[in-house]
Length: 376
Image (tube, rainbow, N blue to C red; front, side, top):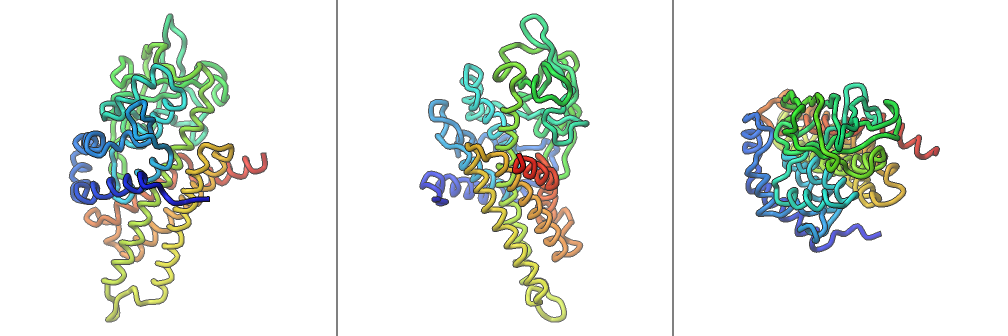
């Protein structure tokens, strides 16, 4: 199997890497984080207009670059290196993935707006009681005339404070945990009856608790067939999980590189701590965790369009989650107390790696899922 990237994919990586190195410094990122906005609209505009990367995974017919999952992997890994907080994951990977999979008039209308940087989409799928069960939904969408009325509560909706649209899972039929009866809607964020409670997240982004209180929406906001969206939701969450694994590869690469550099400089007992064998072994173990995470993430990404998708993604997420924990905790331990300070970048990479551990499923969840799929 050929694991080499094409010339176009290599160019995409170089373009994103150079831009972030030139404009997305740690200090610039922290200025955005401290602003409380949760993102930088100027950066998002540059992603759309200067770099064109918001169109990376979309077809040329929609104005995209004709790429797919590999392009998302490349962008997300570079974003992980720089701790980018702008909403590429929910907007391009998740909402874009759902629209690509279903097509139709809604996709034709919204995908060009995503590529242009005009549509910011938050994925409202998690509920307080649901844990990682995508079918555990109390949010309902009941038929009302020619449309629907939404009621329910969604938790930890990343990017919702500044989103233009919400991608919402809701139950149009069936009981609370049935896979049948799940529907997917793309609604304007300013729809009457949508109530938000915004807050910052520990990794520097912004999220919301969203409450739907008799929110009336049109039937044209339904994505796919009514009550038959569960398979699509599983697919886009798997694609998002693979993308988060790619982001983790970028995060853990920096954690290892930063810690290695620190070990060469920090002196104890008259010599650099990197000369002590126990530190050298720890750094090698960190390096191995990162390299294994990179390899299994690539494998999962390559299998997103195959029947092995779910199994490959869960294998990757469980391995990547362990890598995040190992590299993050060891980076902090080797740095000492300064490793968790707000002034040092490594502390912020540690926070993001810790969040990634549980995003879209913990290590234990994905090990159980992998076992369940393997047994059949």
